[in-house]
Amino acid sequence: MPFGISMPGHTLTLASGGPVTDPGGIQAASLLLAGPGTFTLTDPQNDVGVLAMLNAGNVHFLDSHGFTIGPVTGQIYSTTSGAPTFLDGTSSAMTGNLVAQAMDGIIGLNGSLSAGGTVDLVMQNGVFVVNPNGALSAANGWRIWASTWVGETRGNVQPNTAQPNFYGCTFGAGCSWVGTVPASGDHYVYLARPTVTVTAAGNVRIAGAPNPVFTFSTSGLINGDTANGALSGTLTTTATRNSAPGKYPIDPNFMSTVGYIVDEVPGTLSVTLVNPVSQSGLQTFFGSQQQTFVYENNLQGTNICIGSNQPIFSTAPLGDTPDLLSVEWKRVRSQPNLNSCMLTSGQHGCGDF
Image (cartoon, rainbow, N blue to C red):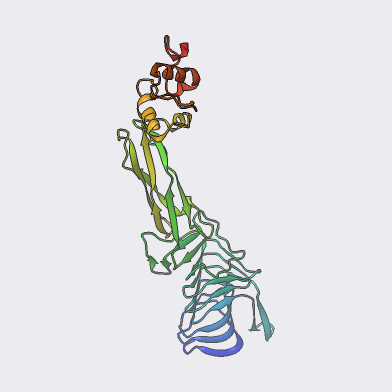
């Protein structure tokens, strides 16, 4: 069609067994493309309300505004009967690939759409909206390219891949990060990029022991994305097996394989001289100074308990000149659980008393 066609408020049916092009634009309420021919209708003056395909081959359609893909009934002339007949475009079906683009606005799916090849629905200044009757299938995969996920309605059009969504990507121009949208499978693809926060979990180990397995948690994943599908990376620390006791950072080193902006929050690895499980079993009445002495010296060295001029469990004040030997023996007699910091099993040890 060398000059295009304008039929505002009416339905236009293009039925062809060969290629159809239109450099002049089409304005119509509804447009039905009936094959088995191919259709390249990419004039920026196209303005169609509803688009449908019936046994078409490859279709590339561009509209100046948003449109819907839905039921269209078209009328053609039958050379066999010599009378008009109707084409039922209630369900859109095609044998080839479909690229349908809205320059400004939404693309809605108001019926079923199936393709023998791939389907790309592109609305990068709008969102995708599916009504309850909408359904989409493509033998070689479909992709929905939209500006954002906010305000969209997916309905029954759900991806079935481990990476259902990609972000920060433009149709025909790649992604703003290092990566690409797979050419196969079903995917939603957005211009906008969300943020995921990766937080390293803290951990504790004994000096001289190997580092434990580090773990992390995430927040901010959307649209059914998972950490395994959306993230790739490791957790590292500067602490080695020979590192001195102290606190060391656990640093997340992650990137998103689907386009998330990654915010990383480090954790802390505490290297101690005592097993934290053993430490938790010691008497809780030790003060911080006493605990430091007991934990850092007694458990890793000579098994001896701290001294004092007053029994730990004594509630009555002693005189000005207490019998220190009596005080210490009273400590032994009144502390049956001192095996956490004293050697009680050896001969001539505290266990004899």
